[in-house]
Length: 141
Image (tube, rainbow, N blue to C red; front, side, top):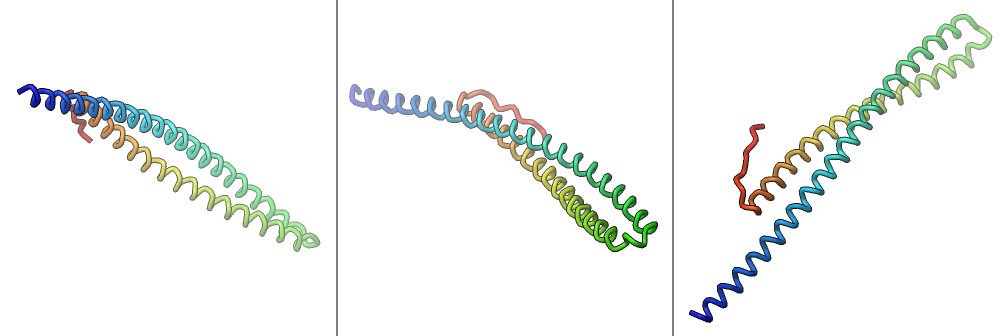
């Protein structure tokens, strides 16, 4: 019984050590997920701000295009130059609209990443609870 007892003690100590290591790693995972969530939230806020700014730029570009169009109608001598300016503004406006669409896509992707991060946080919490041996509280999604 003495040798078996020592063997059991060695195994028990190894299991305890492994459980402690798993608990430490689960805590690290939780911290990483929380840090990622903070970064995702910051990115979402930046994307929303960027989209708002692009919308304002787009409105300004529309207004400028209308003004340039009026100048073109009133001035036949400078018609060629004004048409060139109008074309440049149109290209800027098109690029602005593309950038606005891009900002919307970024915001959508941030939402997806945020949802994934929430799921990762829940998994990390469950792992942490499993390691600590506490009851798992299920959340309804």
